[in-house]
Image 1 (spheres, rainbow, N blue to C red):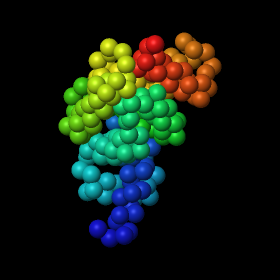
Image 2: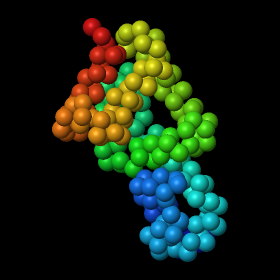
Image 3: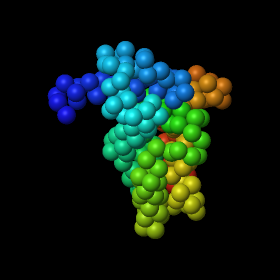
Image 4: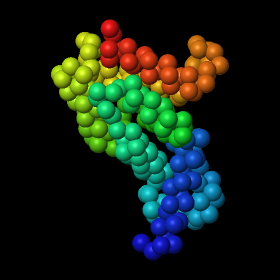
Length: 190
């Protein structure tokens, strides 16, 4: 692929990321993506095949980047939650893409499902190992502990209206601190 073609594909990808985060799969418009990317609409189909395939590529890339940027430390789940909060604060499009995937695809058609499942199994295994080594205490199933750790920060960031209704006007730093403390208590209830 030529340098110009790579640059065009990168612009399309960036424009698609923004479009899908704002409008979801059904609401996204290939015309807007092409206009924003300053690219020919036919190139989008040539590079990605379909709007749905482009969404899948965007979400797969977002999830791969998240996994690489915020690895879990099974012995320090509160620290993991803190790093996850920082990542999502800097990259709010990732949670929006995940919400759109859930809303529009439900539990089927999960992008890169086998890779993501393996990634989450690795997280659970890291927590299980920390429990086995006595570094994490409490009797919570390691899978549930990972899910709770993710949820304590991701859900309030994904649904800010619910966060505001329950917690009032809460700064993200305060939310990070409260989430970190909640997970600390889950992992060390003493």
